[in-house]
Amino acid sequence: MASSDTLAAVFAHIEANRSAFLDRLLAYLRHPSISAENIGIAEVGALLVEMLTEIGLETSLVPTDGHPMVVARWQKAPGKPTVLLYGHYDVQPPDPLDKWLSPPFEPTIRDGRIYARGVGDNKGQHFAQILAIESHLAVHGTLPCNVILLLEGEEEIGSPNIAGFVQANKAMLEADLAVTADGPRHASGAAAIKFGSRGVVSFELRCRHAVRDVHSGNFGGVVPNPIWTLVHLLGTMKNAAGEITIAGLHDDIEAPTAEELAAIEALPLDIEAVKSSLGLTRLDAPADRPFYERLCFRPTLTINGFHGGYGGPGTKTVLPNEALVKCDIRLVEAQDPEDILRKVAAHVAQHAPEVEFVAADAGMQPSKTPIASPFTAPLRRAFVAAQGVEPLLIPAGFGSLPGYVFTKILGIPAFVTPYANPDEANHAPNENLTLDCFYSGLRTGAALLHELGQLKAS
Image 1 (cartoon, rainbow, N blue to C red):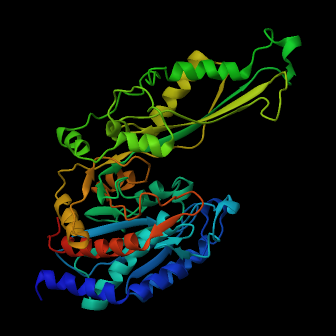
Image 2 (image 1 turned 90 degrees about the horizontal axis):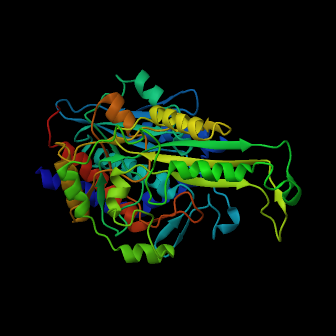
Image 3 (image 1 turned 30 degrees about the horizontal axis):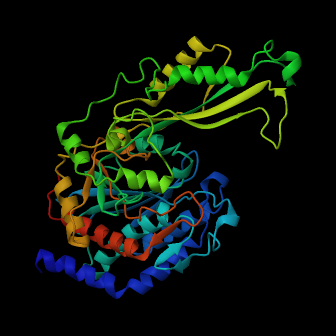
């Protein structure tokens, strides 16, 4: 059978089983798997082991210091590359429940969309990968390349154990490349390949002065105000021009290549539409910094929350005794989370020694794969075969995924191929995935395996 006929037969199988595949996805989504609350994790892990074993993969549930990893493999294609497909079977808590139009774990189809917690992030996307594998096996009895499927149970709580797991299991996870189907397509709706992810660190700044709240008339101007202390400290960390002013924070950043700069120049952009959709009159400073340069190549310093003092109705002339700020910093290649946290701690000690610096966790490293990777061409061909369009090339994803475990620990290129619609509302009420995106992702996953099968192992 010719190569094109081989893939066409798999596409025909997918088309013939659209209804059955959708029913199975809905059944999968009915099982909660909330990592933050340890609800349903063990049950869904066991469900996946059963499901993947039934379709012909050698599957195991591997324990970690937290939630277990599901590892499935099919390695019967000698001389062909091995692709590691990563996803996560845990989901965010569904709160606030009163904002959902239908129950979060009772998947509902409305206007061509599936509404359920986890449908976009990430169950619907990795289930499409699973069905792509199953479809090849059902039609041809074999896969065109070798496959390792790694499904994590802790992505939604920051992947605290994946680095140790990958480090300890390098031999079991040996592959030529890693592909993650996660996140939304480009805001324009276009298909995209992302060549990395930003990293992230989180921390708190805590300040306490008096032993109790005091009267703002009796003690104002005498007792130091912890909110003002934090405001002044934050002002030394990022100025009004939008520049992060923490010493050394930018030292290790890798400058974008000419190829990466050309890639972001080619990305569709309607800044006025972006501002209008968010009710903005301006973007964050500096105003002259290009939109995608900010999102791909620049670190950020974000105040996630500022807590202190009175926030109730009316007024209360009180001078609070304590205040708290929560922050995160998105990292770009090749910033290191531990190094960045040390630099923030040193900055706080220098500018506001009364303030307590508390790192939330070890953070997540950034990752990046060169656009010139030899696997870029077959990935692009897979999108064209499945969707009929060339995908956009995005040098680095804007959020954070644990792709660094593949690039930095396994030493292999890693790609993100998002299948979800841009308005999937992941992490929010009424999370959704369009039926078109689900079936398109399934076809793309099948085409990916096919195109990789045309290569020889490295």
